[in-house]
Length: 189
Ligand SMILES: [Zn+2]
Ligand SMILES: [Zn+2]
Image (tube, rainbow, N blue to C red; front, side):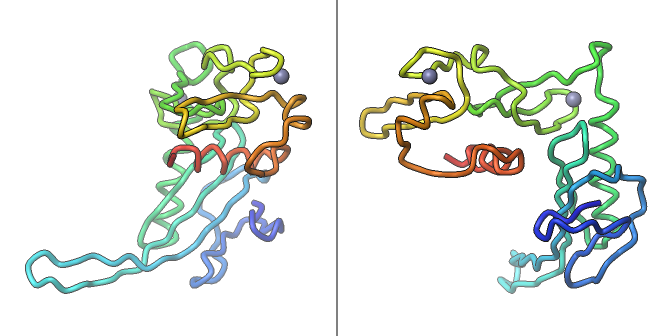
């Protein structure tokens, strides 16, 4: 496996930071990228109004054929097991067509979810399916989006025209992971 933040090959271990490196329980492909953290979750007790806390482990894995998977659990084993179960669902998702049944669900950058297994994917829905075309040359594109909140309009730029029509925000378009993270952030707006 490869640690996303450090770009280091971690072999068959996952490091949840607070726990130290843990041997993985499942045969993840070697090219799987992983980011794992442990976090404290606070919950308010409804009756007494007191807060109790517990430690929760989270991991994000990017295995081949399933762009993005999130797992969580109280232990490293439980956390990995939930992610592995989702990965198996993604790998075995088929109605005979051999592909996922992608839905955009509001995304406009080509990302979406499979309606059967819930897998998240980037660059799986075409600009034509989304009815998005470059405002300069008219080519179908998911490359760059500008939203004018005052005018209530959204326009698009293809990669070629993006270079000559400077955008108002910047992020690297040329790294798959950056695209994936941008796709996730896109959900918030
Ligand atoms: Zn699927
Ligand atoms: Zn264009």
